[in-house]
Length: 140
Image (spheres, helix red, strand yellow):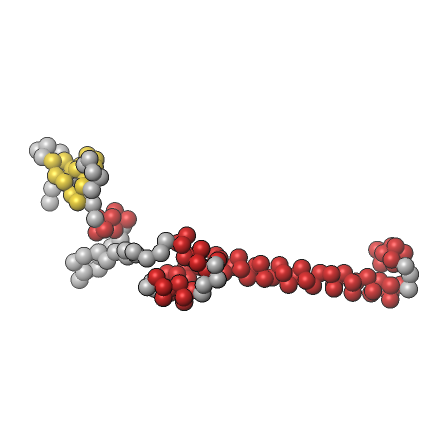
């Protein structure tokens, strides 16, 4: 097998130009998904003649996240795009985490005034003193 040296891309960028160092002959290799997969290091199994490449003509991650933020479920986005639900879930996870964090913030925010009120009543009950005196008594 002869080894080739990469010279560059042709004008339209669709073929890789290579050169045989010993003879100076030039070769053109079409840049396709199989070549990209090989360059990435995807391995073919022993009984596999071609490298399987995941080519998604569906939604980009940004589009997936935008639809999830707009209120669509992971299942709805997967069905709409005709994509594997695991792929959609992978990009939806950060948005779902944001959403759950927002809900938690609202819950904590709604509980805080009640907690402060209970703390205020507890101080007065324990010490029997007005607010300022109760605060000093509990700190001591």
